[in-house]
Image 1: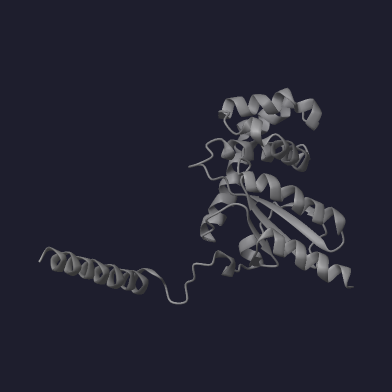
Image 2 (image 1 turned 180 degrees about the vertical axis):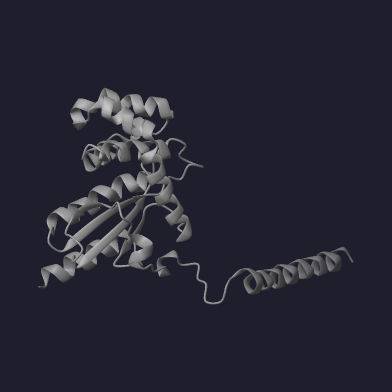
Length: 220
């Protein structure tokens, strides 16, 4: 009798699980929705804004890469130099656009680092600051906002930054507004991870992007 009860309980639990998952699939997944994030596409209007950080080619580039990135994300620290290398290797064909997507729930000071990079842009030093932050990612990971800023200030001469201008730009609120704009756009696109990289409007992994660009350009 005990074995029969155990068998019935197992059968009921299995049926509940099966029908429960079916119900979730029917009621929570939108028609055509996929669990594969790399099926996502976006238009230029969704990906580009009026204050782009661009490396490489101009608007007529054959390949436009838009990177939504987080300064404390380890994968971003690996991928960003690879993307910059592509833009520098093919300066007439590849346009790299950097946009901020700080995941503040897991990287509390990522937003502030993005603000600092934007403040540096007022001195024409965005890419220098961007590269410095990624190169020192491990040193910055566990720092507070104040400590992160002090670290940049301590290395301002190495980066080529004027500290007074940097502080004035941060105090103006303009860098914060720019980061918030990028963050809102990432949320509108329903991006869920970093780095999220689009190649000509198609979300793609870095290895596919590199392979596609290098293969096609080497065959020309």
